Length: 178
Image 1 (tube, rainbow, N blue to C red):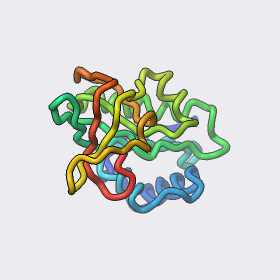
Image 2 (image 1 turned 30 degrees about the horizontal axis):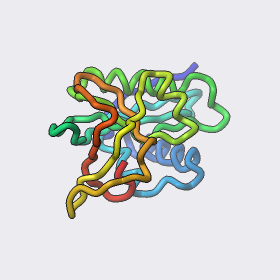
Image 3 (image 1 turned 45 degrees about the vertical axis):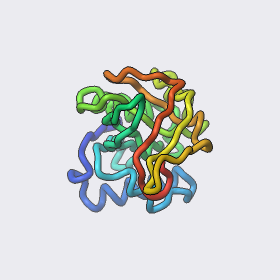
Image 4 (image 1 turned 120 degrees about the vertical axis):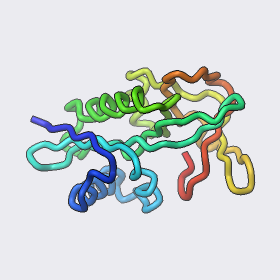
C-alpha cells in the first residue's frame, strides 16, 4: 500500500529532501542538475512512499508566464519521477492527481510544464494541452525566443483564456528556463 504526502518544501526534513534528490538523480540517470533541484523546491510537493521507500515525487512551484498582454500566475510542475521497478502502478497518476488538486485551488490561472517525450501520454491523457505557439523567456536582456522548447511545453487552463497558438513567455531562472 502506498502513502501519499502533500506538503510544502518547508514541511520536509533533511532526510525526506535527501530521498527526493536521490530519487530524481536516479530517475533522470544522473542528468538532474543543481539548477534543476533549485527549480523543484520552494513549492508544494507530492511524495509517494511504499514500505518506507520513496517511489514517486512531483512538485508545483509558482511562476509568472506572459501571454496575451497579461502576466499570469502559473503552477509549474517540476521533478515528476517514479522509481524504476515501481512504474506502471499508478504512482505518476497519484502524483498528478494531487498536484492538479493544488493547482486548481491554489490561486493559479493555469498549470504549465515542460514534458519529456516519454511523459507526453501521461499529461495529454489528463487534459494537459500542448502549447502550439512560440515560446520565449523574459531574460535579463529582454524577451528571447526558446525555439528548442517549442512543442514540449504543456498547459492546463484553470481560469485563464489561452490562445494555444499565441506566444508564451516564462520568467527568467538559471539553468533550463522552461
